[in-house]
Image: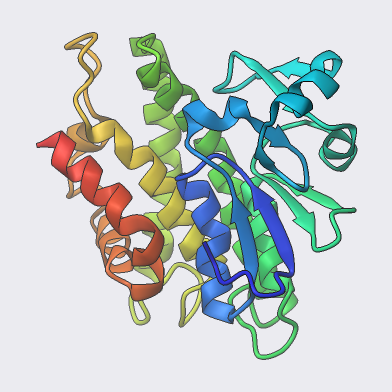
Length: 271
């Protein structure tokens, strides 16, 4: 959790997830206080989905019995969502960010990260120092969405034992397309070693978090010997600069706070 002394925003989500790291890492870089509330994915069904997200009480379950909804992506159980939550978040999904008073909802991890960056108005180049740099960063964030869509479908199928070669191949194509752009950008900016400028920006943070999420697929898939790791199949030479950048960021103190335990666990299970 980021320092939540007078937080400027609150995020509710299952944790840990690299997509929330986008906001927490950004907040550390620019010294903005945010609050993250949540629990492990299997336990999220026992939480009230609200600005005041918290573990459900029996009273909550009775009061909201007629206001449950069936989870969609990743959740196939009934979830307790308040009217206020659904007003702020019309798609009813998480991660769900709120203004400090709970009145304004912001959804989608990239948009939440952008919000964090905008909360600091002075001496802040993490989201570009001019409209052109900001728009270039936006381009990389938008490109990540196509990859994220396929990777999420692939990873969820691995989790529930339903992965197929078709799903894997779709994820592989999205991964290749995304990584080609990252590799080209890093090659053009070799002098500084970042994706868009002389320093870390939201483009670097987004890349690190999306790759960290996809990194789970290096663990063996026990249901079929035909579903093998895409990252391992392609190997380290194809996207040499991108993988080097990922491991460089992985060692950065402001990234390690969120990512070390998560990524070390994947490495341990993949050997």
